[in-house]
Image 1: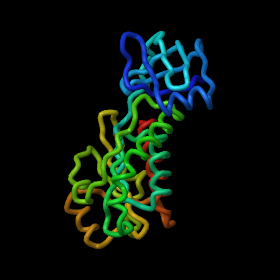
Image 2: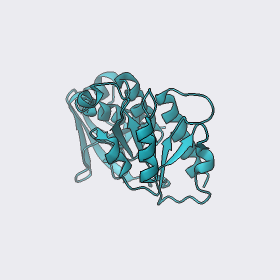
Image 3: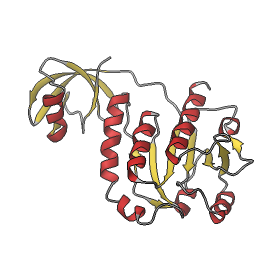
Length: 240
């Protein structure tokens, strides 16, 4: 299976990768003129051939536009901020699982100072998402936003809106998913911090109409719960 790379644009049948990414292609992957890969301009995917491969610049010539993938629901992840090494893992794995947007959320029990430091990390998270998108052969990059307060996240619209909740009695996520699912749906999933949700936050979920759901009787780490939930949602829409 061919590797896939993202480019800024395709113009007149040509595309170019420069800088650090070009150096990675030429020094690490050792790409050469004449080799064929797939490229995406974050809209369409093309079969392309390398025209020139230099240390600072790799130029592709498109050969044909490839068929689009089968559409799926739009999944938006609202993830409470946790320690950055674990949050980076969330970004990588959520990208591989096909999320359309990742929104870092400031929760009451997020570690102090994370929301301020997070704004400086967004570009790094986008870089991680780019690499994960190329590895998983996505057509589109996920959008990663600046951190937002919980109230702002709760105001976002969605066909279905679920919040992971460790409180006993929450409905299992698989059972909460609708019996009839379409690719026009938007699924919002909100995941908590390491310390869990406060009583006030539980009240806010109810007031905003978000549905509490459970991942089972075991208490999962924040990052584990994210990936488990996204895997369930991904499979549910594939099997619609």
